[in-house]
Image (cartoon, rainbow, N blue to C red):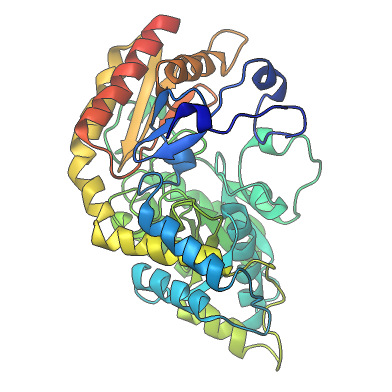
Length: 441
């Protein structure tokens, strides 16, 4: 495509940008106008290698013809149909394709439009389940410090990021939190799952002792991504599963980031050897071509809610766009690519090279920790005195100017390339990042 034909904005005033420094950006805009394969392109035609799969979501790379054509075909056939008391075949097919990939027994799929909606949906299903089985006192929801479950009030409440909460006053009642698992004193520069920290799961026993039989569910990310790549210690999730079973608590995995091959398996549950009762997903479900999320539940959860309700609507919840035809088409095409190209297998094959490349930055100035798992890496920088986040943001800007897209959260650089990444791409991502860290030290 000729760079002269790429779209260029003529007014930056109207768009209130999400999670952005709007004032800085509109004085110093960094624009993307086209995407293909492993790269974005600016309106001027300059290539920017994607080290983050967009926002953890374009696992099959950009501009995949199969997905584009599926969306185009469905748009021409039927642009929209409601799924309240009506159905359309493609939504059922998409749900079946998702259920083929989820762990055995996690076979019921409720469609949403984002990871945030998936989180709130999962929490509501958990509460409905406990009520349907005669445990109406179980209204308490447990999250984890430094957890991220989107920006709905349910996900924010159960999440554990102070910056996401401080502007908005009171959160949901009846919420408590487990401690996070980040322990740099014992686990710094760990490769893969850190050795220390299984005992942190036992803090759930303390919450049970405090709250009694009022806990409905525990929600955690298999690997926390948005708070800086926090990898669970060996045995931690297994122990959490045991305690949830012991105390009649549902275990919810937020797989929005870890789903669809990111950890070298279809879902993080498979890689980590723990099956939850409920899973949330989004991002890689449609390769981000059309917004879509989903919640997958165990058959037991579904049957309890449906069969435990009086005749009529069993779950008073849903979205206008649940199972949207275009999103369903995108999901079916994406999951077909996922299988045909074995994207999890590709991630597993290159993971050792990715790991070594990430840890090669350990001696760079200001690097205080490096964490990795699957095709995710977190490089933590020492903050500048009185200016938290400024060092990493300078690295972000330098990398973009040098042709590589990274993501920062605080002073942590988070990397999650498309699963089609190859060794030369890894070398370029890490080399550009190393140069930027040295340049702004």
